[in-house]
Amino acid sequence: MLVLLPGCGKDHDNWITVSGKVVDVQTQQPIASAWLALNDTLTSSRFAVTEASGVFYFPLLPFSQFSLYAGKDGYIPEKLDLTYQGNDISGLLFELEPVVPTE
Image (tube, rainbow, N blue to C red; front, side, top):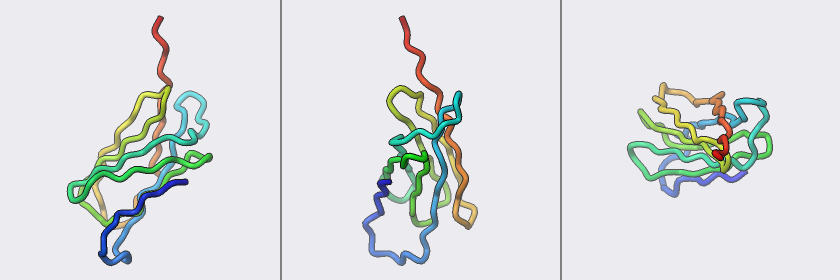
């Protein structure tokens, strides 16, 4: 699993974790190596890649609102808009739909 930590000198005790899973909507099988991008209102984007089980983690400082995108070649990307409620955010589920080839 690849997780990129924000490079700031702030107190890491204040960080929260955003985590979840990326699966194929049709088979419910995990999607390994799917990309994720997290955009918040205070810093630049952060990126991660799912592990073989489709699981992802983002450690970040708490923000009020942010957007999380997931995708992979051959799938339609998906976006979630989230609001920070004071705790870690876990159990997010991205169900990506395969792209249907056009003839």
